Each structure stands twice: as structure tokens, then as C-alpha cells.
Length: 104
Image (cartoon, rainbow, N blue to C red; front, side, top):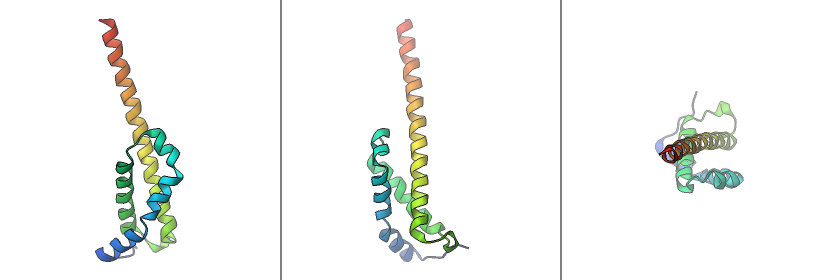
């Protein structure tokens, strides 16, 4: 059963744990730079994840902060996979376009 928070309590918990986003981004900074994701977009995605994680939190999951770190890292992995797929799709479409132009 989820722990029930009022909106004000949820917002307070989220504000108190915004530092988790910074920590996750700092720990994975090399990857963030390598994938060339926009920092603001990534931060926003992790902030939404943080809000949803606080809403879904159940004390049976264990302490809150480690749970939040796990959720944020999973969201970061999802962003990584999406970024890779987009980059591969772009490379494939770019290669096809070059091939067509060269055959004319």
C-alpha cells in the first residue's frame, strides 16, 4: 500500500530531494556529455520521475532516498536508450540520403 501524501507534503518531499537529481547527473556526467542530451531536458525528465516516484513510494520499498536514486537511475537509463535509438536512426537515414544523392 502506498504512503499517502497531500499535495503540499508531496511537494515538500520533492523539494527536499531535488539534490538526488544533481547527484545522479554528477555521477553520470560523462555519459550525459557523451550522448549530447540537453541538460535542461534531462533534468526536467528526472524531475518528473522524482515527483512520480514520491507519489508511488511505499514504505515497504525501504528508505525513501535509496528508492529515489534507483528510480532516477532507471529513468536515466531509459533516456540513454532513447538517445541511442534516435542517434542510430539519424545515422541510418543520413546514410540513405547520401547514397541516393551520390547515385544521381
